[in-house]
Length: 561
Image (tube, rainbow, N blue to C red; front, side):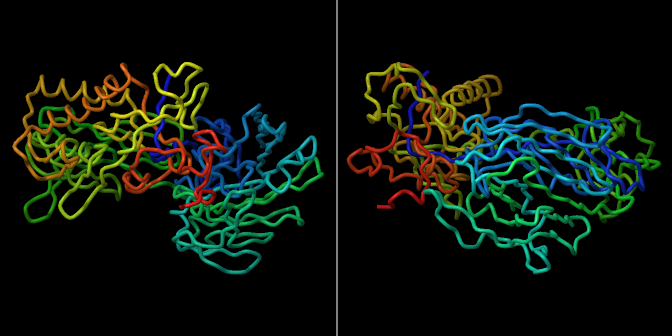
C-alpha cells in the first residue's frame, strides 16, 4: 500500500463513553458489584473496564475512571511516562485483569514491552473510599526513573473555576491553560500548579468533591494542566514512582463524595426534528437504576399564548435495564394533529418539536449549504463576515519513502508504486477534495464514497439547489451566495477533481495525502496556515539530513525560520 505525505492535517481524538450500574439506596459503602465495578450512591469507579490503547493513547477511556453523580469526570488512572501524555505518547498494554470480589478489589497487570517494564495496578474498596496501588516485582528500569508515575486525568469542564486545596493551600482551577513550562529531553513539559500530600478537588461543590491522599510520604501529588500541551488535555494528578524499589511503590486513597440518596434526573429521548403525523412516535425515558418510576408521562400541545395543554397522558411501558440505567417508553403515535408539542415526565420537560406533514422537508439543506463548502480543501471559503479558511494545501504532495509506517496509520512496503523518488514533489494533486471528518487529511476512500452518494442523490432526487458560489479557477467558495449553478453538481465536480488528479499525476488512485510531520498534524487552526503553501524544497529544511519524514518533532524543537 502506498501513501503520499504533505505537511498538513489536524488530529482530533475521540473519547468513547463507558458505562456503569447501580447500588442500594442509602448505602455509604463502596461495593464491587456483579458488573465488576465499584459503586455507591452518586459514585461509580471503574477499574480498567476498557482495555488501554487502541489507535491512539489519549482516548481517555481506560485505567481507573470515576463516574461522579452521573458524569464521567476522571479517567486514565494508570502508570504513564509523562506528566500530561498526548495522543502518541506511550501507554501500558493490558496483560491480565482479575476481579477478586471476595476481597473487593480489581488487579490489573500491564506492561510497557518496549521498556521491558511490567507492573500491576490494584484498585480496592475500603469502606467508602478507594485505594489505588502500583506494585512492581522488580524496580523501575533505569531509563524510566524520573519518568514513570501514577496519573489520573480530570475533565476540565467539570472543574473550571472551582477550588482546590493542596495541603491546605488554596487555589482555583484555571479556566485557560497557563503556567510555566520546561524543556526536558527535547520535549516541552508542564510544571505542576499545585502539589502536596493531600489534594482536595472542588471542596465547595458536593457533586464534584474528590479527596486524594498520598499514602507514601516521600512522593507528593502534583496537579498539572494538560491543556498546556494539547487542547484536548485534561487536569492531571500525578505522583512519580520511586527508583530502586519494588513492591508497593505508589498508593493513593480516593475519597469521592457521594450525595446520600442521589439519583440522576430522567432523560427524555425524542425526535428533536419532529414527527410526521403518520409515523410512529415513541419517546424513550432513561432513569437512574435506583429511581422510582413516576406515575405518568405527558404530551403537551403549545398554544399561541404560550400556555400548554395535555393532549395525551399515560403510564410509560417498562422496557428493561441496560448497563447503568432503566428504560421506559411512551407511545403517542395516535396524536396526528399538526402543531407544536413538548414531552414531560416528572419535573423534566423537553424542548418544543413539531408534528407536521412537512417536517422532513428542511432537514438536509445545511449539509449541502454549509458543511460541504466548509470542508472544501484547496479553496478559500467565506460565509458573510466570516472566512472559514484560506486556500489550503497548495504544496501537496511528497512521495512517501519505502518501508514506512506513518503515525496516522498510513503505510506501505518497499514498493512505492510510482515513478517518483522518496520525498520528491508530485505535481497536480493540489485540487479538489474535502477535509477528512476529524482532521485535514485527504482520504481517498472518503472522497469516492462521498462523490458516489452525491451522484446518486442528484440522479434519484433531482435536487437542484443553488445557495453557494464555487469558483474553481479562483479557488474560492462563498456560502449563502447563489451563482446560478447547482450546488450538488459543483460538489461532485470538486470531489472528482481530487480523484482524477491522482490518475493524471500517478496513473491510479492512492490511499490518501496526510501530514508528514507530527508537529503539523495536530494543528487546530485555519488549514491554510499549516504550511507556507510552497512546494517543498529539502535544501530549506533544517531537519532534512537528520530525520525521516514523519518523525515526532515538537514545535519547540523546530527552528521557526
